[in-house]
Amino acid sequence: MIEAAAFRQDEPLRRPLRAAALVLVALAAAILVAWAMGNAWWLSFLARVAITATAALSLSCLIGQAGLVSFGHAAQVGLGAYVALIAGEYGIADLTLLAPLAFVVVALWSAVTAALALRTRGVYFIMLTLAFAQMAYFIMQSLSRFGGDDGMALARRATLFGAPVLKTDLGLALAALALLAAALIGFVWMTETRYGLVLRAAKENESRALASGFRVFRFQLYAYALAGGVAALAGVLLANQAEFVSPSYMNWHRSGELIVMVVLGGATSLPGAVIGAAVVLIIEEALGHWTEFWKLGLGLVIVAAVLLRGADLSALFGRARR
Amino acid sequence: MNASLLALQALNGLQYGMILFLVAAGLTLVFGVMDFINLAHGVQFTLGAYLTASFVARFDNFALGLAAGLAAALALGVLLEIAVFRILTRRSHLEQVLGTFGVILVVTDALRLVYGPAPRSLRMPEALSGAIPLMDGLMYPLWRLAIIAAGLVVALALWLLVAKTRVGMLVRAGSTDRETVSALGVDIERLFVLVFVFGALLAAFAGAMAGPLLSIEPTMGDNVLILAFVVIVIGGIGSIRGAFVAALLIGLVDTLGRAFATDVLKLVLSNATASAAGPAIASMLIYVLMALVLVARPAGLFGGNGPS
Image 1 (cartoon, chains in turn blue, brown):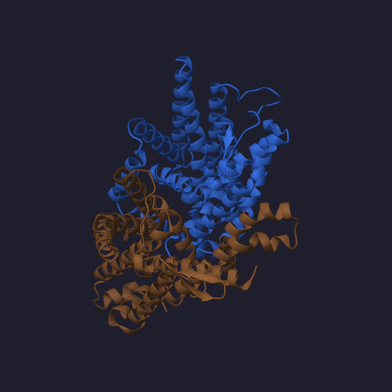
Image 2 (image 1 turned 60 degrees about the horizontal axis):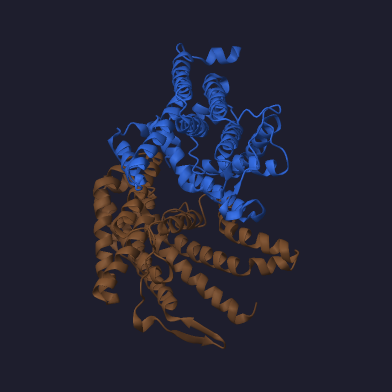
């Protein structure tokens, strides 16, 4: 930490932390209001926002901080959901065991695939992450014992120390909020450590970071594994909320939507990913309420958002350029 | 697994590979020249199939319907180029992925809106709807042979175009070093429009040719798009020759894998295990292939030297 302090500039942690706190307090307040009004639909929607935001947040850490554009992040979420499903079939449904299990399994999968994908750069990296996500998709699709293509219902919702905390909508929403809070504060804190600085340095100029003696590959590998693990935890909660898991969780469209959330919120801002996730889900629900062709509207919003933005973003994603 | 079955599946794989090549050719050229990732390239494939199907139904004549369908698909492609892609080419890869992903959502739902959710079918021309005997016990559908022939003709024409003409030379130069070409006074934007229009036409043509073999639905381009990306990444981005080789490789590996993986596994595994694992391994084969190629050669088989 002393070393990290030396690296630090004057105005570091406080602003993103304040933004993070603001986002979390707003979400908590919304959950409490929904609960007080006894509105089950809103409660479950807010839980979904918190879960999706956690997944988007972990992707934002990769895209915005490490400059690693993963086009297969939904697979990590889906694999987490499958760990919950499969472990549940074998009687493991307590979060004390389930959460570390999902984290470790998916972090390992992420580390192995990243070790291969990180050999490439630019669009090749994007396509390799997509290829590995498709592999995960087809593996799960072939597990006929666990529902195959159709998916399968979860045996029962997970417990915490034997207490059925996820049983009610409020419990689930609060658990999702807690996970989001831990992930958000953890990631924001990480960006200001020496580790986070090296990640960003490698994103800006990889050869320079290498020349400075940092083992960039290892830093990026850890980031990829960590983001995968966090996405898996979101997947566990997603499985518990839907009480159902299917390969469609890992569809590449979902990975695309996660990228949309991250970029709409401002890719370099971690709290922004949470806002991006909330905005996309609200657009989906609002349009979905109104017409079955809601993807048309979402697509138009995405295209407009990309086109209307200035060209200055390109500098931020130097790594994604060839 | 006898010889005629193997030949049949190999021909199917070849035909599938040709469709993939037609889609991948435009994708790889656009990427090579403009450094532009166009996820919405699959949309051209879908549009080609839908528009050809509806024009063939209207004119009751395949050739006329094909021409009208391709022209309409091309017009829509040019519209997208002017409204969206032209701006995106100046942005980062991340924004290109995002913007073209948005275009996929829009076009997919627009097609659902216009044509309804039910799949459509496209009638193949009467004259090519039969089958001919190729060898003992092997009747092969003429239409699939026509696709293979069309793919070969396009590949040859593309090679001549890229290797022998002035425009082809500019395309090759542009994908090697865009700045220098543009500094030498070549209007790179116009070159891009040309390459884009050509690629869009090929993808629409692939959709129209594959239309009679598939059920035509709004998401049909998604699958082809992902495979086309696998093809150009394996072949090396920007390389027509790479796209051709990789497309045939992917077509054959995927088709033969699906046809024979379970049987091959049965040689070493129990029947039940093989039947369960076979389909999964068959669907994963091409992605495994892609991962292996990229690990061994991070810029693809023919990558790194510009189009060749």
